[in-house]
Image (cartoon, rainbow over all chains, first blue to last red; front, top):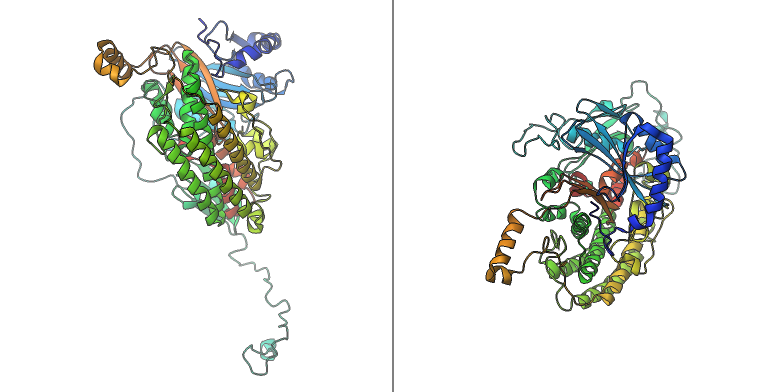
Length: 188
Length: 425
C-alpha cells in the first residue's frame, strides 16, 4: 500500500524524521476536535507523503487556527491552497498544504464540499488566502463564505464555466472584444 | 501690481546680479474653493503591456499626485491552463510545460517536477544525475537572480549594471546549452534521469564560469551597492516585514530579506544539499535594498555550491535503473523488437504512476516552488497543482505599494521578481 520507499535523495526524509511528531499531533488534534475530524490518513496506511486531516467544513477555520496558534503544531506557513474534483459525493475537496517552518514537518488538511455548498473563508487567518480562494472559485466554482472579493482571477470576468472541473471540455473558446475596465469600487 | 513695477528685471542694465529677489509669499498657492486640483485623484492603468511591468500583468492605481492611494492587481493574461494540461498529458509529456513556468530559471522547474513524480513512483535517479541536477538548479538560480537585480536596477535607471550581469547570464546559458541544446526552454530532466549526460569537460567549463562570474559580481557590487542614488531609491521602499511575509506566505529571497531565516535547501534538504557547505543570507528590513543584497549574496553562495558540485561529480549512469521510466536508447530501438515496443508504449501511452498524492517543494530562485500531484494510478495525473512563489508575492504588491510613489512601486515590483509565466501558469 505504501508507495513511498525510502530514498536517499528524493526528499522523503521528512517521513523518517517526523513520524513521531505526526503521531502525537494526530492524537492531540483528535482529542481536541473529536468528531469534527472525519478521517485521518497517515503515511503508513495510505499512499501520501504527509498526514491528511479530513475536517468538516464548518470547523475547518477553527482547526487551521488551532494548527497555527498551538505551540506544539506551529503550522503558520500556508504553503498552498487548492482543490480537487473527486467526482463523487461530495464532489470537491479543498486542500490546504501547511508547513511548520520551525519544526519542519508539513501537513495537509482537506475539507469535503458538495457542488452547491460553500466553505468558510480563510482570509481572516492568512491574507494570502484571498487570491488562492479566488483561484479555486475561478477554476472549480467553489464559493467561499465571507470572502471580501470573490471574483474570477485568471479567467475573464465574463467567462462561463469552471475550467478545472473534470467535465469541462478541453476544446472551444470564448472571445471578448475588450478588457475589463478599471473598477472604481475596488479603489475606495 | 505695484511690486512688479518696483522689481528690477534680470536683463536690465541696472539690475544687481547679487540681490536676492524678494518673492515674499507671492508664489505660495492660496486655497481656492474652485480649484480643480484640490481633491483630484487620477486612476491609471499600468499594464498589461507596460514596459515597467515585467510581463503581461496589470496594476490599476488611484493616484494623488504621484502617490498611490489605493491599487489592485490583475493578471491572467498569459494563463495557459497548465494545471488542466497536466491532467490531460502523460507525466513524460508534461516536462516541456514546466519550462514555461518561470522561464528565467526553467531548469529548477524541470528538476522539481521530475522530483515530484519520482517521489510518487519511488524511483531514485543515480548519483551523477542528481549532481548534474543540483548544478543545473544553481546555475538557473544565478541567471534568475542576475535578471532580477539587473532589471530591477534598470527600472531605477542603472542601465550599465544590468549589462554586466547580462553578459554572465548569456555565458550561463551557453553552459546550459552544452547540456541540453536549448538555452531558455530547456526540458532537460526526464522522470528518473536526464535527457543527456553532461559533455566531457563540462565541470571545467562551469568552474571557469564561476571564477569569471565571481569577479563580475564583485564589480557589480562595487558599482551599485554603495551608489548614493541607488541607496536613496531603494532603502525603506517596498517594505514587506515579517508579519506581512507570514500573512502572504512569502518564501525565498523576499522572505529572507525580511529576516525569516528559512531556506528549503538547508531546512528540508533534498538531493545532496545537506552534503554541501553554504550560508543562507538573511536581511533585516525587507525593503528593496535588502532583497537586492540577499540576492547578490545568494549568487555568491550558489557559485561556491557549483564549485563544490563540480568537485564531487563522478562519471556514472544518468538514468534510474527502472524499466517503467527509462527511455530506451535509440540504438536499441532500431535494433531490437522489445526496445521498439517499449519505446512505442512509452511515448504513446506513458507509464502508470501508482495511486497516491504528494506535495514536493524545492527552493526555487523566487521561493518555494511546489508540485502537488494527485495520482489515481493512471498515466496522467488526477490533479496537477503548481504552487508558484510569484502568485503569493504578487498578491502583496498592492499592500507594499500603498502610500508610495508610482516609481517606487516599479522598483518594488522589480525586486520581488514576478514572472508572468509562473504567476499565471
